Image (tube, rainbow over all chains, first blue to last red; front, side, top):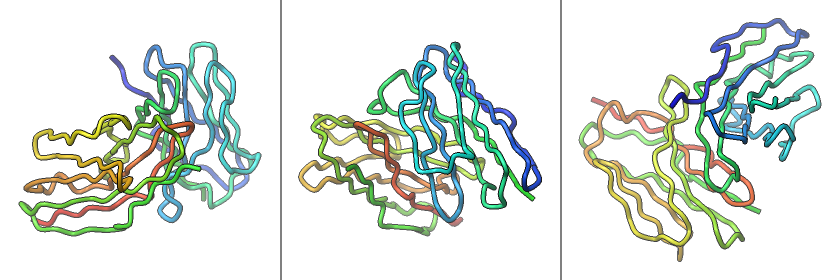
Amino acid sequence: KAGVTQTPRYLIKTRGQQVTLSCSPISGHRSVSWYQQTPGQGLQFLFEYFSETQRNKGNFPGRFSGRQFSNSRSEMNVSTLELGDSALYLCASSPGQPVYGYTFGSGTRLTVV
Amino acid sequence: AQKVTQAQTEISVVEKEDVTLDCVYETRDTTYYLFWYKQPPSGELVFLIRRNSFDEQNEISGRYSWNFQKSTSSFNFTITASQVVDSAVYFCALGGQNFVFGPGTRLSVLP
């Protein structure tokens, strides 16, 4: 059974650009969540999608957005990149409710220069 | 509101020592799950264990063991005879209405 797949693994962007990250959940999982991890702030919840609808949202500016497709694959977009957006972005999938926990992908390491 | 506290920011031990990572949680949910994840230097979060709120039995899996005590809202994780490969950041997490991570404990096992 394939795990959670995130692409790309590494990305370097220039300040002001936008970026799109992709996540393919485990087959059959309908919930996809995104987290940002930085050395200073730890793991911070961005948003969760379930059956193409955003179910939960963390405390991030509107530059961070996401969506989920009918096949449960998800993308997250960051517009007008700032240096502080440099981080490891982790995607996690779950069959449904948060109570059951998540399986994580390997992450996309974004560097903004 | 849900909250997970991992008071130990960093721990260093010498190989073969036993080490316990502490986790204290807060929740008003009557049904919830507790988790431990390991994050090695490669970055991926690896699931270690899930325990539901109705099951307070301790669990042992090889060199790993977990002590869940509902009375003190704690879910501690012990590594016996630690090895260098155990070096990682360990996260405790709580799943209920939402899913909440603790801040993590960085464990360094020195040869």
